[in-house]
Length: 381
Image (tube, rainbow, N blue to C red; front, side):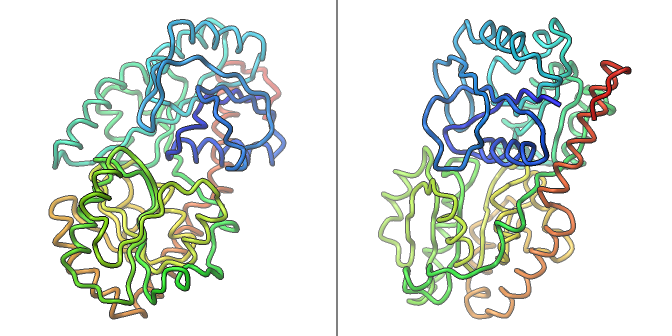
């Protein structure tokens, strides 16, 4: 089967990780993959597979959205005509091209699957979650025209079906992580930071990630000389947060870490992973931390609370995150046995539900089903 994948290679975000991991795994299982994307930067350091690529012209691209040029749809249509794939899988980049894809693929008689990454909160508890709900309302009429829409949780499916996307077109396939690559192991991080306890945030530094609540909690918790908070990532709020919290005791700013092995080393060296987001989809960074054996703390935004339920981690409410973390941070500092226990439970939860292998198997079944619906006589599997 030949899969035309439309996604992102840059700048770094969950969509980029998703596209890289899934396409690598599909190639490993013997599929032919062509990659269509807006990025032109060299991202080979992140171990992208070798496949046929098509660059689509754009005016602007960011972690959150992409603005294509007026001719991008024509370039895409011509590329698909030439490639003649069996199916198109769009890891939606939140761009105007998302709305034109169904028409383009219908004209070419190519089945179309989308993964909808838009973050959400099941309850409109803050301005940011309300804004994200508007994105769902805006996208729903267009998603109804895709052959299938992949989302990450039943909560997300309920939301889309209430907004008019037919239930039969919505497939729940949670994110998956390579549990052999992201696993507990040896790291020199604590020696590097001269700390006996390392707390970690890894991800974008933007409004919806609510990193300032974590920094405020750390500042007012008096964590002592042996504890360190590692902030790994970059984003629009990074300069201002470093300005205000750059001299806070125990906070170490790593910036964006492009090398995957370095990120794995950081994960293996940390004790506690904290994700204070106001809205989420299903955080790959959270799954990677869980798979690496870290005790995990996350808000119940998006599907993250569902991942940590029933003892796999600590779940916070998106209200008053700072005060909740002020209570929790000293507990994790003073009780290393709690870190170990929660880390073991987190790893086990990923092994049971969120492996990349399981994700790809579900994806294979979905592809075969969609292709058969479009062409009942197809011999593709």
